[in-house]
Picture 1: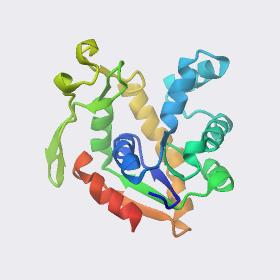
Picture 2: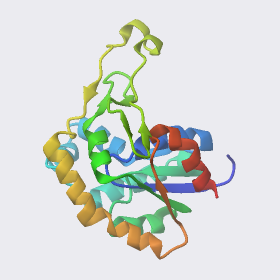
Picture 3: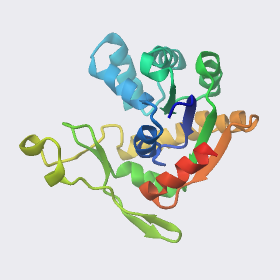
Length: 224
């Protein structure tokens, strides 16, 4: 897509922001910038900054604003982001939102919503492959208006062939205690972003009921 487009995905942990972003960003021809991925990559370096990040994540806390702002600003300067981007996981505070507007103002902010108890179930069921880094979810929910099948791996179709470990693992930061802590952090520190963006004409709210099958409807809302 040649038109410059900058999008932000908001929403509590477990609503599926990352999964939707993985599907939609390639369709729009823009890079997906997952701040969680940037943080995990920094943690993986075992640098002083990585150790600082790890300490906050393991306690279920947000990494301090100044560190995240620096990470995001440097990423948005890269050449592939000059034609637009989709940000997942940033901003998470009003101060981060103000900073983002000074760096590269998003055109539309999508607030993705999901009932709290469903989001918690989905968080606790997240899995990933340590080799190819793909994400999955072993929780299948079919009740009321919800029709959300599990997202399971197809090991036989894995691009790594015989090197595929044929196993998936839970994330270290998805333990019961950390999940509860992260939801509380969201309610206390991140939810005010909705009020912040409601003051502009950029906020769009999208309610998830079919999980990954809602991707096309979500993208249509983004492009309206």
